[in-house]
Length: 198
Image 1 (cartoon, rainbow, N blue to C red):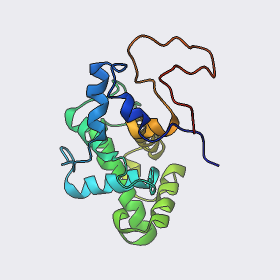
Image 2 (cartoon, one colour):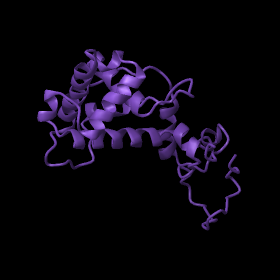
Image 3 (cartoon, rainbow, N blue to C red):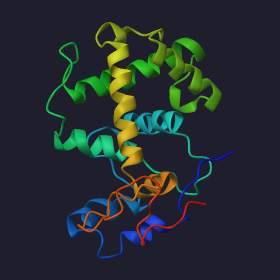
Image 4 (cartoon, helix red, strand yellow):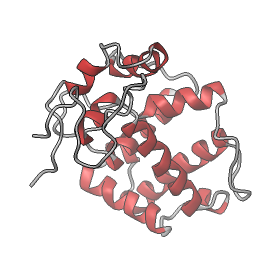
């Protein structure tokens, strides 16, 4: 049984109202665009590897146009943005991603003698399971702590996914309606603008 969610289009409709500030609209509306992204930092093959890894961790077979997660990471790294901290055992983010993605490819080669991007999805899943478990082969993991890299990768992909309006629609999140005026603060009390869950 699937979890309750808002009707399709609810969040997208909400973004068009005066219940959402212009700053929030400016942040969220571009995420709905499906125009192809040109990598700003990674070369084409590394970017396709990042896309394949993201699709493996967050598969979206039900979507005609899956939420693209790789552009969020590539753009952030190209702009030099960060959370302002990192584990002391980790290199700077750009290097961590280059070494970590290379390590994923090394693990794929060790397990299946092929690059990650050409593997079948079940093989990709097994490679990522080895990375997540910290057992993946590859010399890159001698330069980068595999557990910390996977933790950072998973956290960033999760943040990118759930900051997208379509994912917010899936889980019934309407917190982007940030104009003051929420009056129903108790559990199970809907604002007049909130639809009933399906």
